[in-house]
Image (cartoon, rainbow, N blue to C red; front, side, top):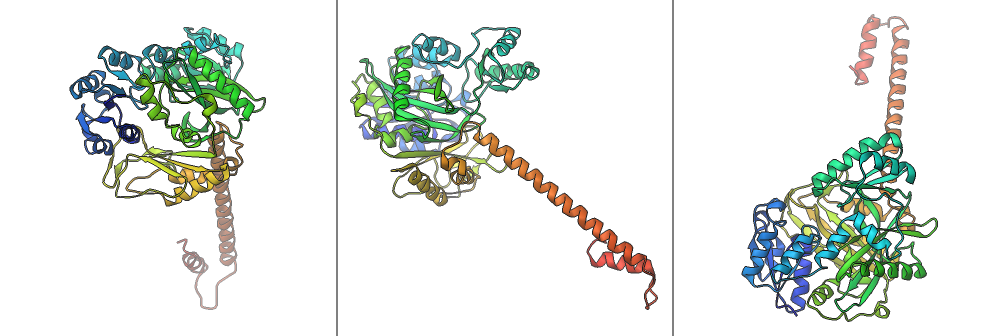
Length: 503
């Protein structure tokens, strides 16, 4: 087993990995940017080193600086967490060149699965079902023709993409050229590569993913599925395990397909195979493979009892996995809410500031993973997710009730957070019944907009009626002649308007 591990990340995931190292008796090293000097993960580590200014391109994305720190600290391995360099084949190769173990898959697997087109071609040879799509390397005119052949609506997707970047939904041919140009620009900005492809859009699909673990001795197991359909702009906000849409027979089948996808690239370590699931006919299609630990891994850990991070470390050290497929017996239901520093009632605008008050929920079935503390600074430099709240129950209903209770207990003062948004979703009939899909939040937004427009129309109608009524009353008084006091008609009308607050 390793003696010392460097965690090349920050925030709650860095703390999660540091805790796993501590439980395995491994010394842990943290890295931090100048703005993260007082961050919680720095305090948790046995050693910590500054690697540069606040922008991630100058710190957490600097392979040379991280490798330099790893050499100085004398670490055996590096855990990348998720985000930043976690799916960077160059970083995995640099670790190998430096004689340092990378706690994740090899660079070849990262490279093959990191390019979506290559990933599709690779898993297709193993019989993994694919969404109908275009081949790689097509020019704009060829992509337009491919979209027509596939049939609208379609999705334009960045070949090297992820996280919703470089993606556009196109409903018809008239919108294709503009959407294609926008997708290419965004892909180039986000990934340095403007290559895109076209894929059939499956309406009302669900986003289902399968967690796998694979060791270097050829053993691969899957840990069941996660439901990740509650998304905003292709970013997951709420996840759960298992999924209400997946029956046991289908679960086994999708798990076996995920294992085949991993075998296609000789995968080793933790990974996730993502599918689009059409619940109308129970068909599923390969979407992509994430060659890293996922944000939502805790829901799988809770229902299976498998500590995925500790298994990652053991596998990277060359140990044989201690689980066989028959050992994986999920129990109960788990739901995760991503707590972000955003204003959900103002278009999810990021919120920055100092945490002036913090009360985290506790109690049976509740787990919080957080990088927050009173006095912590939330800056604009990194992802807005500041914590994850997970609730477990013996049934889905109990898990929802516990999540409601936990969200009600959660207090984060000093910034706006997504907690009110999650409270609304937990009360949503569509979520409670499990009838949602990836279009859930878009439909909810449209309904809200329609309700808002209807309300404005009602207010306008009432206002117009009041004005007409008032004008009618004034006309009656003006035309009724002078009073006994001898005041003029104009004075009577003026006093009436003044009394009603309209002067």
